[in-house]
Amino acid sequence: MPTKRPSNGSTTPDYLSRRGLIAGAAAGSLVGGPSWASPPATLAGAARAAGLRFGAAVRASALDQPRLRDVLAREAATLTPELELKWAALEPAAGRRHEAGADRIAAFARGHGKRLRGHTLLWHRSVPDWAARELASGGGWDIVARHIDATVGRYGALVDEWDVVNEPIEIGARPDGLRANAFIDAFGSDYIARALRAAHAAAPRARLFVNEYDLEYDLPAHRARRAALLRLATTLIERGVPLHGVGIQAHLDLGKGELATDELRGFVAALAALGLTVAVTELDCKEVDYIRPADERDRLVAAHVAGFLAAVLPHPAISSASCWGLTDDQSWLEVTAADRARFPGAWADGSSPGFNRGLPFDAAGRPKAMRDALLAAFAARPRS
Ligand code: G3I
Image (cartoon, rainbow, N blue to C red; front, side):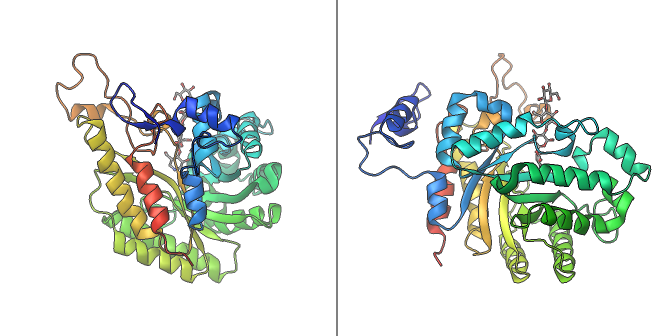
């Protein structure tokens, strides 16, 4: 295998270097140069072989980076706009839509034969101020309906999955486990069904999801959240509401203790019994220890991700797995002041802890152990 040894001592297969990519592209393939007997696996290809779609979140501004474009083009079958489809980003002022960012990601997806995961139509953290004011003063469903129609209508079949409602659960807020937000205040708990019906009317072929976080660990709050989300899904299905899937965000965290692997298996099976598909929508991993050598850190992340994937991926109801970014430098996860405070004296010489290493590729686009964990989990998936 042709390899180059970069200055940090890690070994990068030539097909992942810029040179290898150019050679591959020149030979008519995005992966591998002419010397490859068969192209090496990509995450998209390995997932496809396992009956899954692999995807990644991306911000439109990141598409300025040729290296990231290469990695996305090669490794992801679907793209999730990380910011650009959220209501506050799309319509910061009433009726004035800012679609350039989402359109840019859509154009990249079309140009590379990819689909988009639509994220997200209704999210309590992304209600434009003007809409929050109108909702609070009895403005009615029309503004929500217009937002859903315009957003879903614009991208048509390119978006075949929508996170219609993001993070509708909040433990302790209400007896039904639903989040107290601007929508529930204005329309009651029926806002979720209304949004799903509106999205279904605008895109009858799209698969419609609710997407949720804090479902993965053996913690009381996660247990309660799994139960509340299952109750919500059950109610919606029993009422005949067009809900097709549930998204498990999977923002993993090495500081949160044991994964609830058995419970996760049961949770996926219970959702499947309702006829739902289940997507892993925002996979990444927050680290705890930033002073170990990078390869040790990468192995810890990979082992944790592998444990999560081993719990959920074997179930046939799982349809896709997406990471929340592909390269560490693009991650929303940062090494915070609180993280630094755990290591007194570290980086006192002005050096930097660098990035959280919770995605499959490092900041230079080199694959890490987490990518191997994903490939292995896809390969191990039982074939139906
Ligand atoms: O780009 C501007 C920059 O110009 C400005 O200087 C800076 C100052 O705050 O803000 C930058 O924008 C930030 C943007 O991320 C890009 O970094 C926004 O403030 C910040 O709110 C935004 O955060 C995003 C967050 O959703 C809110 O939209 C994160 O990137 C994004 O990863 C996160 O994604 C969420 C999912 O939608 C739902 N699940 C959890 C996940 C992580 O929080």
